[in-house]
Amino acid sequence: MTTQNLTVTARERDTLLAALRYYQFYRMQGHPFDPRKDDLIDTIAATSGEALDLAEVDDLCAGLRGNVHALAAAG
Image (tube, rainbow, N blue to C red; front, side):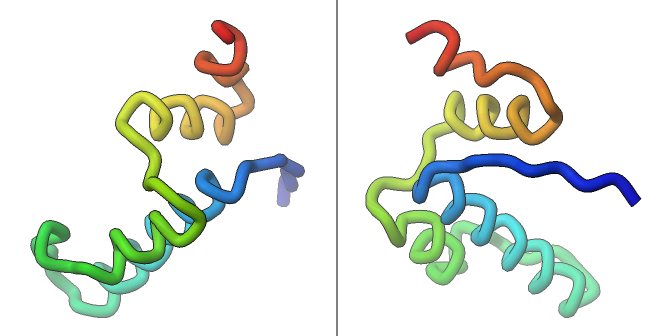
């Protein structure tokens, strides 16, 4: 098993938690559901403030894959 240490901001952590809860719920239901009706996901993602936008989500995914965070490198 490979392990990876990563540092995330509070907002990024909240997005990861929301995604994991979404996955957990999806798997428990056995079928997809409409995330636009699931207030829990938005609540978790915005626990520390504003939820990540699409560019920030892409940046976080890149970081999780071991790539440089594009937004951090540009700034």
